[in-house]
Length: 307
Image (cartoon, rainbow, N blue to C red; front, side):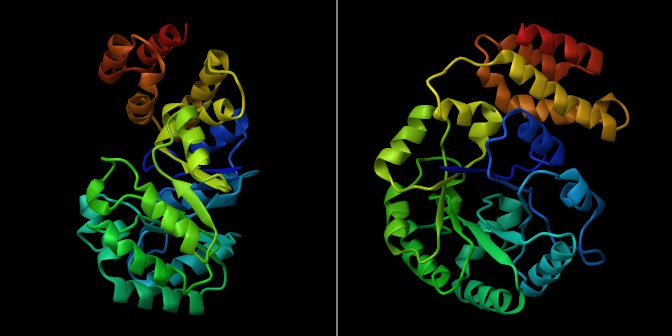
């Protein structure tokens, strides 16, 4: 089985990716938080730092692009080729209201003719591997058949399917019936994405779709970095020593690139929003992390949690 790390804005940047690769080393591809086109520059300074080859050594990294403009997608793709990238990913999955209102992310799925024309132009003019991360429709799963028929016209590296519609956001259960249709009808290689948080979730996926070869994990890994290790072994206990080292690697990485405690704390608090559920009876500690104003205080709380 090949596992991919899904992009999560604000969390899975190169600091996180390097720490994860160092301590877990079980992800085949890391997808970057999305890159958006800019009028003056192809990449802003944050995006450029995130994709610099020297910040991503020893990892297979796939930059993800968020746009509904083929010219912009091609322009960014060619820029990324100059940095040495061989594959890019089109974001047709983001359900955020601000993204969707601009007809981007899963909002683009409402405009099938425009999407078809976009893909035709991109595949004709950009000579590199292109993958797509998609939902199954904008407002109704009935849209999926037509959408997949469009995807089938283009030679993708792979189609990563999150079987929800945009208006689901992350509510309701993934539509496995829609994914089954993709398994039967897709002419492109598939990767499954959506709601794999536990070993039993993973086993149920394989029971339903035993020929699954690729799984993309996002919130599941952020919440429990040991998740893939647990899939592949009988061990269910957390390796707190390893998790602490992983945490410290991330925190130290942010300290190196940010000045002052505030920005480091902001990033670490984002991480604990997901990881906090790993530890029993941690509500009090999570509240203290949320309120703390100094790294010294933060480290003291974290030491107590891992103890």
